[in-house]
Image (cartoon, one colour):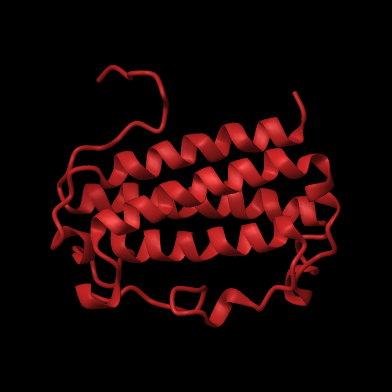
Length: 170
């Protein structure tokens, strides 16, 4: 097993988990904030799909504009207005499509994907290589936000969703 296979295992699990976390939610729930400015499903999926585009640009070795100031970039905040976001079904489709596209692109590019120049100066201080940037965005960053959705579900009084692909006992 190589680095690509390892990253794709987590990437595929994250894709499945993100869909499980948002399965069956009503449109009003997608923007509900049960505990202040908690990241709700509409913002989390919008944010993650923003970074799916970033990952895709990095993989292709194209010039990258800093995503921090994008509509759902790092500096954005969740808002309760549903009109700021795509519809829940569309968000889920974009999330799922982003996962497929990135996995396919990485498989096409192979190990060369890790040899691209670092895309952003501000990332260079803590992510010294392109492989670190890709792994960070695909594994750590996405898992962090999916964990926020898991916490959001609990704050909403909803049942937890297993991250594991195997059933867990209570």
